[in-house]
Length: 344
Image 1 (cartoon, rainbow, N blue to C red):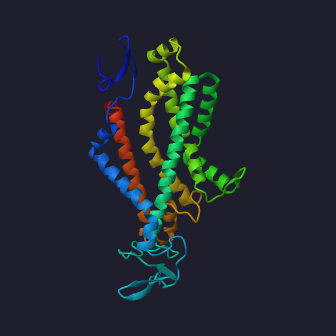
Image 2 (image 1 turned 120 degrees about the vertical axis):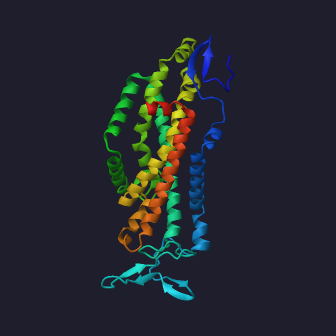
């Protein structure tokens, strides 16, 4: 009989009953892929820079990235230079924020309020990553529970949950997110003594978690329905195993690889949709900042100070590409046949 480490299936009386997660060093296999190592290093650097944002603002930039600095000055070459400088183009009307100094204060320049863009970029990364990761966890957990419930119980429960999934699925993702954001941001939400205002990050986390549930729950529901027809589940039912035991021992081990693969991809998607909502003004609200709000702040300066918008855009692209690379590597490790199916 094959050992537990080498076997891909559990056996009862010599009959294959279910492919399950093998007892192997999955983390080691993922890290054996060079692209996964590079992507992981990038994510660690991005996360650390976001976590250390307060230290950068206090000890390096020496500024408050959330308050207006239109009358501030900075010392360059031994001279005091205003952060908001007189325009030198066209009719020379108005002011233009200082450009990149590439050292200390205003490393990549200031925005139209004279705020240090680098500090805001790091603070924005905190909120974007927090929303992306938290909403992905919530979405995957909710989808796992509902998908397993619909697929295993079946009947009326499956019918009701499937119709709810269909309704959510029918709406374009961004349209549904925008509608929910507008409704929730313009109303005061209270649960007894708990009051959630429009500036709370709980709102974008909840909105993004909800809209992506059917995109994970429906495939999981179909997978569970297929598993319920397999011989190993029927064998467990025939010997009188409880529903909880069947779900815990036979269903969850077979659907968890799919959830693990979905997770990094969902984090990337959630960061994209959060940035889009914040760019439109219906996501993260002041005084908080995210990569999307910084891109919006830089729109009036796109021709004079393009780094204000380009820097957060680059951070979004780099982070999402790294997350997708990790997701693809995990998929290849957990499902080696995926590449063959894609080729066919």
